[in-house]
Image (tube, rainbow, N blue to C red; front, side):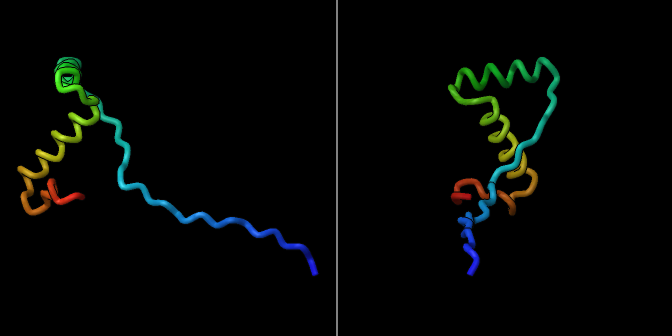
Length: 69
C-alpha cells in the first residue's frame, strides 16, 4: 500500500472588507488628514465613516450602522 501524505485542509476565510483606491484633490486630502489627526484616528477611518453616513443619508433602508454589521 502506498504511503499517502495527508494535507491539512484549511477552511476558506472570506474577508468582510474590500480595499479601494481613491484619489482626492489635494485640499480635500489635506482636510481629511487634519480631521483624522485631530480625532486621533486613521484617514481610512474618516473616509469609511463619511461613506457610511453618505449611504445612510441616501438610502436609509440600507443603513446598518449600530447593528453590529
